[in-house]
Length: 529
Image 1: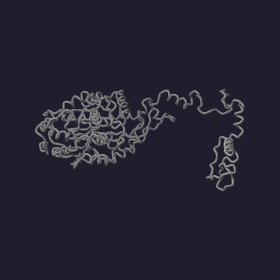
Image 2: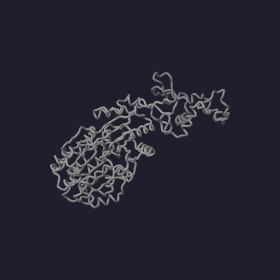
Image 3: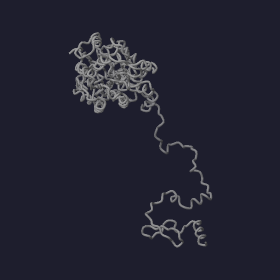
Image 4: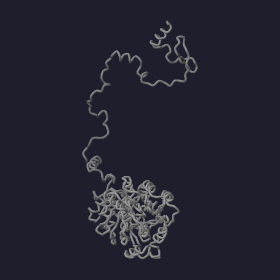
């Protein structure tokens, strides 16, 4: 089947031919006819299978008729990240060369004024991230009542990033009669629920088993220590050992680790750039363009920043951290081996990553071989340098760093501790260090006499009339709480005052004969009257 058999317009076919594509991918050949037939589509396919063109090409054909109105886009495409949104714009620029369509990109990190100007001129295709889209709507700069086609891309990543409430709110703003295209790489239960709500009698298209990895990718596990410095050293030696490495993406779980690893690589002579969510939009665009253009060989990135990026010629992927979610492993290594090319993916694993590794292998349905054959072979490798600050070697055993030089060495967690704190701890633990003050109190006979200010309790008590009257009763009677009293019944004595007796009626309790004088005086006055 060729693109000419899918029902696309002549203008679109000319652009596709000019781009050098002759045969559609499975997701494209199955989804495009249903999109052109105005049906809802649920597309499930692994990353790198051409999902973007599966909705871009039919949208261009459908938008050839009609005209955009101010602040009322005709179509809306929602993407989880800025990079993915910008990537969709590139697809419209590539395949829409023969069309005169207004395409607007609404993402964070860009001036509101420029985006408002594009919306005012009228937009045929609005590509946006959920947060910035809602900002424009709340400012009264955008109306979604004219949306004819809604595309929700990377739905599972939307779920991971917490965008589902925003997506549900946006869907309520668009007309009920719209056409909806829903794409996701995986289908967890929450995504299944959303698809049932958003789609009406959809055509389900699944071109590959969910969360499967491409057969063109060579996957290997690399045993390493959990210590950060030793881990970075292992990564550097791994990169130097790959003779066929053209460029590579290095994934970290945390944004702060992305910045730290990028600086470490640059300090050791590697050409590396960082890409994470805390960077401003200009820096992110610059880093990504430099990597795509071949100016930068290594890109250190987080999952959010690099999810779904279309960089065709990535030769290697390095997982500096084992991903917390097994689905992220599929998306990470999917950055290489795209469009039938070969690729390599290496994952650094320590003993603390056993549970995450088992979840990944269970998801992809196959074990991942170790680089040196198996875990035991990789664990008994030669010694590797430990922390970068101290040059003494440690032996790596089953992915955990074991110190062979001496006992009492500082733990890896102290590698990033302040130098003053480390030196003070070393002095306390060294037998040759000068004696310091013991944290424990000395014995009573050796303790020096302490001169302290006398407290008020040590001062001689001055007997005052008020204190003497207060001490008539023992202190224990005043401070101790009275015992609980049983349920009592009331009776009248010969003076007419209330007297309570216990359940047996024997022991009088309450005021008894100790009636206050004011009560007796009032009773006497009443008797005289």
